[in-house]
Image 1 (cartoon, rainbow, N blue to C red):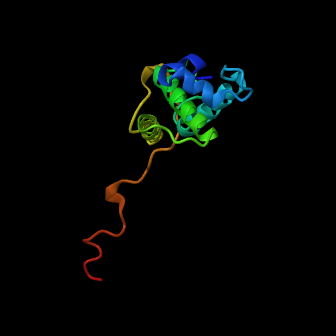
Image 2 (image 1 turned 135 degrees about the vertical axis):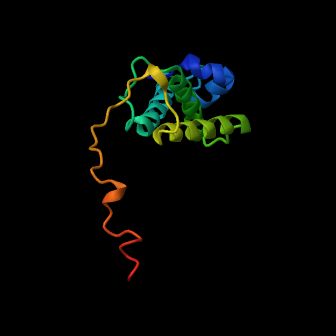
Image 3 (image 1 turned 90 degrees about the vertical axis):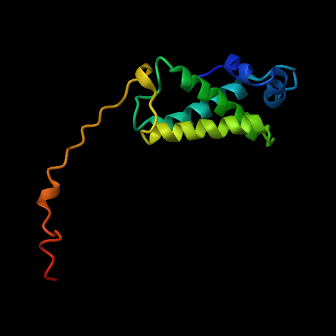
Amino acid sequence: MYSSLADLEKRLDPRHLVAMADDDNDGVADEGVINQAIADADAEIDSYVRSRYRVPFAPVPQIVQALSAILAINNLFARRRETASPEHQRRYEQAIALLQGIAQSRLDLGDASEALEHDLPSSTTLNTDRLFRKDTLKEF
């Protein structure tokens, strides 16, 4: 897993975390609930970045760890059908925008992760090889 309960507790009041993940009402966040929220977050991260990086990450880049925690918290809010605070909603939207940027090659995870090398063929056609140019179509 890319993040842990401790990572979630850094970003959300532990009492609120317990309220969202304590299904057996023992006053402690249920490990299974937390792990599922993190696993779902990690799967979402992987779905965005798998075209550019080898996943799962090992070691986990710090930004991926933070994104996992932010997405997991959002999953916990959604699980209880609670509206996230404006701050948590903003963090979630920024996390998704960051993942989209990584997926579209606008942003990079840096040296902390192994990028995939794509063996795509290069083009053999040059701009000068065009059959239909302005000068050849003048008469039509």
